[in-house]
Image 1: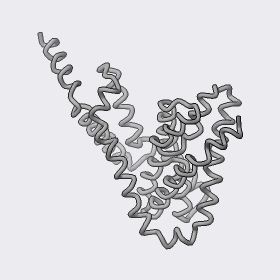
Image 2: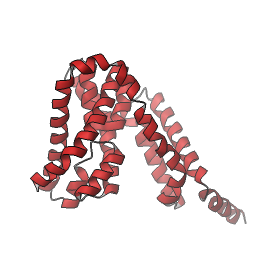
Image 3: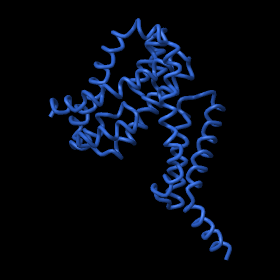
Image 4: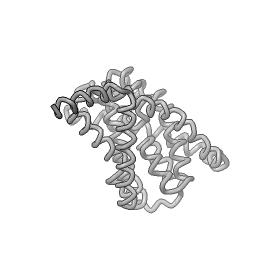
Length: 240
């Protein structure tokens, strides 16, 4: 009777949109505590831990992603305003951005092109299908835009979404270490590098280093998204 009662309770809870929202917030809060306890160790990034917890939960409870997303869509909706809010730290760095507009423009075009071309060519050499190659191409831009680009050029949006998250986590873990090894001191340069390669997750990591680095990372993320959407279809057509 007890098991049947618990089963009925779970059926009721799983049908509620608030369940997905609550589980997401609890998973991230717990992951963030672990991250802080580790003194912000990138290997224990809260996005990585919380995603692992949520995937495990969905598998154990046999909950479909569609049911889960009914609640988590509220957090998904907030991503838009949160991205727009990045304009505030960008505005605080507006004088430096004006001085660096030419290097930033050249970096955007070359960075986006190298990221897409290298992904396609390396996966092609390793024997990946055309569909997988196209899914990899936009992996360095923020997920909603990357999924749209992937669909347009013949990739799998769901695979692209997973690759975007992996790229962001790897960028957050390795990005600051690589930049430190290269002995780069200028936070604007480091921020642009993080924004181009690791989009939102890398930008969050950049803000932990300094507000200037975070501002330039947010700028680079936005410009890289626009640049990728504009030039990637032409690059794909040229490579194929």
